[in-house]
Image (cartoon, rainbow, N blue to C red; front, top):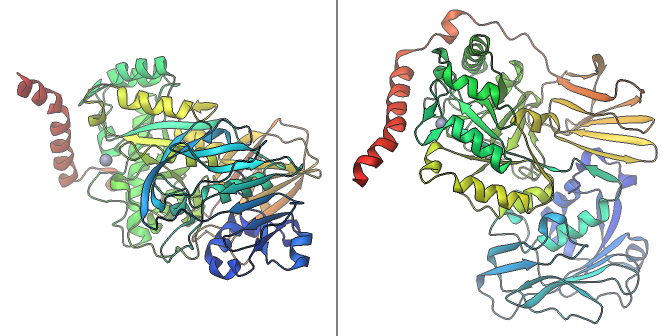
Length: 549
Ligand SMILES: [Zn+2]
């Protein structure tokens, strides 16, 4: 789905959307503000002039629908008479007007009043039903798209992101509205398709050929057969000791297996505990040095994407990761530390292909294997990478859990499985219009095919605590960046004919000190803790065998 951050869209390029009745603008003020940030639209009222000049119309319950729609129109009808919140399935059709990721999906809603039946006029197409009852229809008979859905959005509350209203189990109130806005802004945009996907397994020590329920060679064969990719998130402490047999599996299966970084010592919430930049730098410097030493010794690459132990990483450590050349952090939460309370200012947390955070380090979203996989549908629709993570224990009964998720991903449209570094290197939104190619960066180091338009506009969305000043490096040449007051930035360049790709890097201030032996040398407690954990994990399959006898 097209996501053009509001600050990057000039007011003149926003398409006006009339709301009927006009008081919907007050009732849904926060929701509409977030939607204006997500889409290049401007919500206006319901006066004759507003409706006359609008590019689209949305009618809320209580509003009078236009007799004959002149522009695309969405009519949101009220729910049924039962006021209780209920669970019900939403079954979507294969109608060409629906986003491909929605086709034939059956999604469970758990937090909405049961929707009322909508009337299906002759010639209309049914987009969604619940238990056989039509709840979303589309009619193009007047030459203009007109949709009716019995889905009424809720206003965004304090402490909520927009994504909280479009997520597994809680989506129906917003889905038809968001889908309608996407349909308005899609034609001028090109999002990187196919979907980009990767599994991640946290914790395994790649020193030996097996870890708990995992065998790396069997995993590679399984991934090859079922055409997926698995990144092993290894703990830098574990990489200090050599081990050759498993390494050859990684070297020989780069399309199926890759390595990424999982903390440093893997003590409890270690990337969230640092109290200042000096301490955070020491931890990240240690991780980076241990990883480099392993790469030299083993001859296998460990991608500089950090998967934080226990899912947490504070802003000061994100900045340290940026200074030490990490490409991204992969985490379940866009602001992955306890006590984040800036929802009102960051309503698009979790909505974008990545959240740029401190030092412009992107946080790319990942989803626990144990959660409701309906969320993959919304991620695919929003153009988010599809990253699903688990542990060796998920393989206790064989590889079936990964196979099931891979099949679910395949149903969303074309998909390419790839390492996390490749996902972040392609994490951009591209569009071309009026001789101008626009590239919005959701990554700090990108390599994409060169656009064809004579001008290129490179946009950096606003970041949480960006490092300013910074500059943009375009195929090796430096460009100073002019920042807007909100922290977003853009650079315009004439397009060249060669080379055939664009390498775009956001370069933040460097000067991170180099590592000394005291930085990476292991401390006693992490070694003891690591040895105990590993012994526990490795013995799990044996314990199971003894118990089952
Ligand atoms: Zn872990």
